[in-house]
Image (cartoon, rainbow, N blue to C red):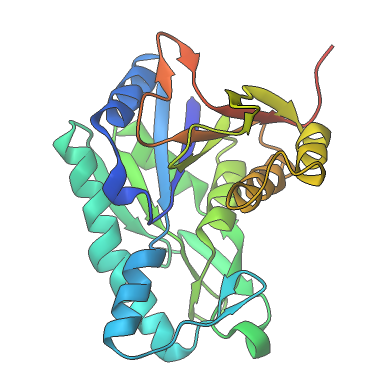
Length: 255
């Protein structure tokens, strides 16, 4: 089974173009099974603002008190997940929303409870459950929530969750969907680069600004053992006529 793990950030969700869904259809026609993991940062921040709770971050991760966790779970499960599932259904996909803290789907452990609160990293993925869902020709859409050993819900960074799920499913590729088609050098799309090349481009400031965290996340995911990690755009075709459009990261060039 060829599995494609697609990570969607909350910020791109409302900007997805029809051509993005056409690319997904083309990938299904090529035999890929699709699995989604999504974030929900903008929706979460909007709700926190409405409740007059000031967002806090530590080393790039959302500091999650119990009050913040209630908001995170409410928004991810009740709004963002439903929005993505509805969008996929609109374009003809049999999508099903799954919450990572249900049925031991995603199990996790605290990263640093004193500094981050209810924030975790994934220690185990119920891959059998996801594979069973895929066998029914359904498209699973997962929230990045995990359950600790003692039954507590943990907030998991969506990028980290995507990498962990991709690894557990032995996915052929992990795709990070953004608002740009990939890494540009002198205005031209870089279609393929190795880990070393990417790090050099960051050092040379060819990769800069908001693209740096995107690339670093891609590289981190690559090091989990996924063969191909890609950055693509949600605003246009990213797969067409059997060809990928975006930046593909590989650990090293194969001879």
